[in-house]
Image 1: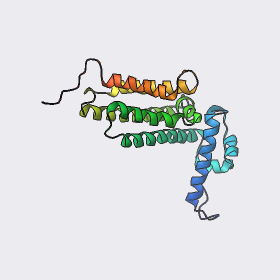
Image 2: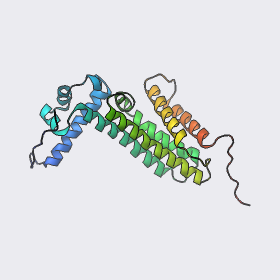
Image 3: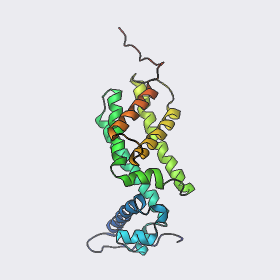
Image 4: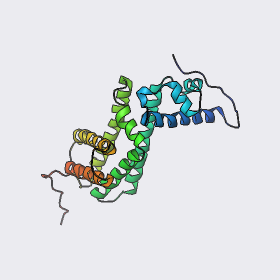
Length: 222
């Protein structure tokens, strides 16, 4: 298809064109979460199969998307957006807590969001990989957003005297890879631990980065 078809305009069935479009998009994304995130997976799903699962027509699909890749891109952003919302809520609720407790609250929120539905894990860590240069760029851009968030938290902790002052971009980049790898392996059943134990391990690793052995917090003035 060279591009999306034009959707009908005007009110129908008590709903505006914008409301009908939003509902169609929601149904396509819900169906994609099932088909891409479970069986048969993104690479084995067709437009016809996705449309049937959504209870819509292929014409309606092309009114919303140009190709299945657009659906996967939207779903990947949606799953990450849900996780980010959970993290920001947790960070706001943990304001004023000591660093270990704050870090634990944030990681519990992130892990709880991405593992709440196994299909989210597969979308985020499996199906998005290697699809196209465009989606690889999106994946890396979304990971960079998580790195920025982690660097901001680390910088704020350093400003409070709870962490060593340094440029955290390099260690944050490596740590994000550890987070994603460990959560993926845990969800796949390759890690014999509870989710709480996984989060506790991630918090220990993060604190080791923020508080290296040669760093000592400044003593308050007498």
